[in-house]
Amino acid sequence: MSTADEGKNRLLAHLAMLTFALLIAGSFAFGSLIAGEIAPAPLNAVRFLLGTAVMGVVAFGPAGNTLAVPQAPWRFIILGALLAVYFVTMFVALKITAPVATSAIFTLIPLLVAGFGLIIVGQRTGPVGLVSLIFAGMGSLWVIFRGDFGAMARFEIGPGEQIFFVGCLCYAINTPLLRRFSRGEPAMVLSFFSLAATTVWIGLYGLPEMLATNWGALPPIVWWVILYLAVFPTAVSFFLLQFASLHLPAAKVIAYGYLTPIFVIVLEGLMGHGWASLSVLMGALITVLGLLVLGLSHEHPKSGSARPKKRLPS
Image (tube, rainbow, N blue to C red):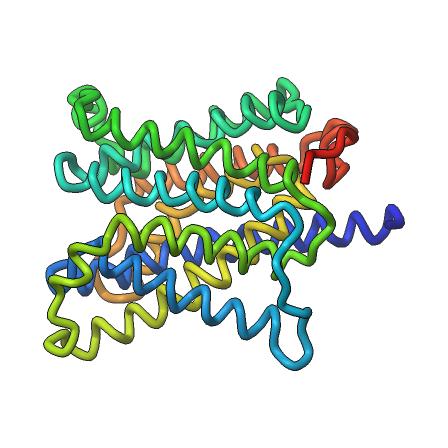
């Protein structure tokens, strides 16, 4: 691939992750509308099942790729299991701790990804990049805690936070593994098999609640939100994440998650739920500036290759 083509793909990867953060924010904004209508496990199991179907049609439709058993299918079992652990621990944590606490733990992921990126694929995040990650993370925490120093001071690490931290570790490992496990397949094919494996793992976890759910009694808004979640924050977001992970260092990819609370504030305001205070908006600006510096920072040459030099066993 020429230098010009790779530069174009890196720009598209940055735009992909901006879109990714916006779509994930939409899942929070719209998901809150049906929070009391359906349990998290059945909701996400159906969401991933429909998302897998959508991605399958796109990836293997008339103008798409040929559906076949992928090379080294164990890769997707591992990737799916890691993502499933992340979502399951999030469900469990949200039952015993506040969403703001889980959000605060989530801000550790980009730094964790930077560490695992170095270990797994040799990606080095330079001093400027690390400072930018910390800077953006501080701004994100300010947004999450609504600029309240007292709320930050009262934050305690309880069982829920510890459980979700395990999930965040799995999520952080998954991002560099996407590049480590790549065998040159199209991003849509990678997305389909990763999504399918995640669906199986989450389905196994949520099966009892799925069987106990009265699906016929759910109001129409639940199905509309499920449809949104399946198509955009699931199928489309998986593709965007896979594409970006092949063209950007893992730390840069996952750092875009810092924008999610900001996009949530914007969507909540547009939906008529009120706008954030000026203090919170200043924290959002700090996050954006930190990500801008990170995006412009120099990438180590090792981060440019989508595949490792040492071939993995089939």
